[in-house]
Amino acid sequence: MPELPEVETVKIGLAKLLPGKTIKNVTWDWLKSFPNSQADTDSFLIGAKIVLVKRRAKVLLIELSSKYSLVIHLKMTGQLVFVGRERFGAGHPSESLIGHLPDKSTRVTLELNEGKLFFNDQRKFGWMRLIPTAEVPSIDFFKKIGPEPLAASFGAKAFAARLKKRPNSSVKTVLLDQSIIAGVGNIYADESLWGAKIHPLTPVRDLSTQKINNLFEELQYVLRLSIEKGGSTDRNYVNAEGKKGSYMSFARVFRREGQPCPRCGSTIIKIRVAGRGTHLCPKCQRLKS
Image 1 (spheres, rainbow, N blue to C red):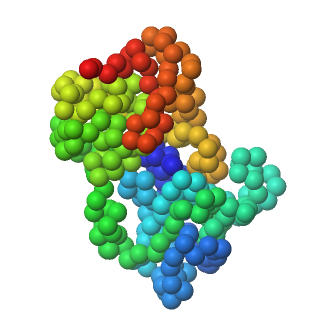
Image 2 (tube, helix red, strand yellow):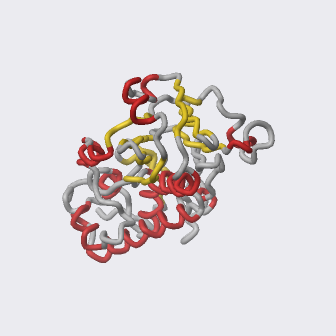
């Protein structure tokens, strides 16, 4: 599933490409991908101008001049790719990565006055919902979600307070809990824990203030680095122009099992934590008994 850096990268791209464009038509082939009434679609989507593109946690928000917003969750395999009018068909610079669009994974197509926006989703778990903009903060998902880890108002003390809400849980489990911190998933949990030299199974109660501070710094570092590198293309992720991210080539531990730890040379191993494959260095990240 795309994590915060991947969704932020898509947002950055769409924010440059979409505002000011008008939605002329929409087509879809899977109702769960576009669960909106025809009446709302006709009244609040068709003919509306795109005003703003935002992100909250792993969700994208496209605000419209109709005072409605498209709330988009990419889930596991979702992609949002914009293709300008002059770039359709063979010769599109991203065709070698995503193929000619639309394709068999395209669930929703927004036709704009300039270009098209394709919502592709192989697994069909993602969705694009049309909701009054004023009601977006009241959606259950947004009411339950934790703070943004890169927000200027979110510091190390607030991070520690959030972690300590679950003192008996393993630190990785807490990092993955979206109600504690927004947007962090498997890749960046593993990367930040390796950077802070913390075993993923360590209970939060056993972490010193210094360790928590180190973890906060590492988490912000890996998130910012990944955004800079355009996210991490592990499987299906591409940015708003269909290009893959390069963070995985900079990853220190994730998907590196059997390879030497870049810090100490020990062999990286893979275990399971909170039902997720978890990568760590057994020497750098020792679990205290």
